[in-house]
Image (cartoon, rainbow, N blue to C red):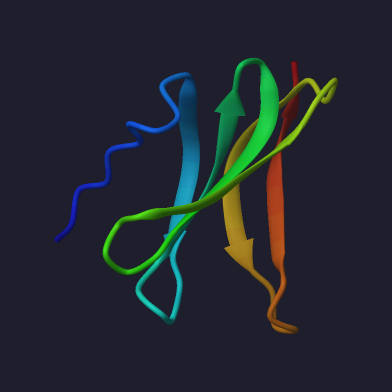
Amino acid sequence: MKTYFLYDYGEYLSGSFLVNEDGGVLSTGSYLGSLAFFKTNSDGDSLWLKTYEEIDVNASKISKTIDGGYIVTGNRL
C-alpha cells in the first residue's frame, strides 16, 4: 500500500481517488475553493493539477468509464 502526500499543492483537499492501470493515482477534490483534479505517476510524483474555478461542487467520487474517460459525481455547495 502506498501513501500519497500532496506537498506541492498545500491547499488541495481530496474527495475521491482511483488507481489507474499504470499505477498512478487520479484524485478529485478542491484546490483553493475550485473543483480540482490531481494526477500522479506510479512513483507518487505529481504530474499535473487541473482546476475549474467558479464551480461550487463538492466532488465526492471519481470513476472510470467504459470508453476510457472519467466521470465525477458530487453535489453543489
